[in-house]
Image (tube, rainbow, N blue to C red; front, side):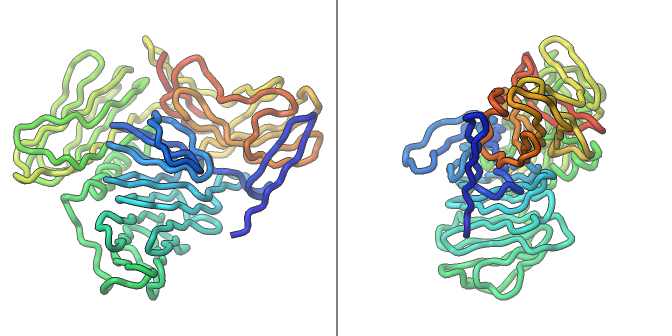
Length: 429
């Protein structure tokens, strides 16, 4: 793969780009929903513990002991399943905030890839058994790469289509293919069997249920667990911080009966029991932290993996109550005399654009993607012009001498999402 390196200076400030000026690094963010996250910096062999909202650099390797994912700036996600480890070798977005290309190196476990759209160029997952590449299709690409057997990989496609290794023909939606050494097919292609004991399949179900109930609210979080539920046991799935709204939480699991408990900041608990999926609704929920717990009533004696998704709807407004705050705005100041304004529509990414501003060294224009990198806000510049001259935006730290650090809105940021012509910054003090 040919990589272009461009370097320019303005007023002594260096602008560096790993890709062409038309595309920029997609700024992957590690999201730790539960448990702990670990990262190995590119070129190192020693891991370090990292927190929710950690920005990943080129070729950083990450994994989660618990529940987590890697989010790209266009809204695409990589859900890290049991034992999964990935490294982002290439990931770029265009000036409109759309994913252009990505190459993910997966070196263990199971990972679920949920793309917001088919990339303009390519999306490839590389393993010891070859490459799995997304095939342009009408369906939103959703597929899993499973390396847990240790002797081959299994590619399961839920939506879209994926070409894998040297296997003849694409692996299409509703099918799965095992791939051995050298990228050769290891057996015949099989229908995608529904496995109720698969936590990633349960996650797809719980996310779909909540998305339908909330109209696709962009505030959701999903918690998965391989430690199966056993009768009479109570497990904490995770916690969800919100500035309020209409809460919907769904438990998807394998078994005859289980209960989902949602405990609010006032200590009050709502409990629902039944067959999967189990849903709890709390209209106009008050701001605070909500604890999600799962109770097995009648499940497999060997344990039942599960997934829980929660989201708040009707959140397109400013709100402040106690320590929790939600700010609806159309613009955000960055650097001296430079303001980014939301344009376009859709929930994620929050694409901002600047008409023009006078800064220290002259007239500047900037477009960027804004996203949460807890506890602050992160800007991912898409393009930059100073005095009408375009410059690469990769690793942009200043605009003509005016510093651009991760923005601090005065509170710890939980999430950022689009809201009509504006956007919402939500978090707590």
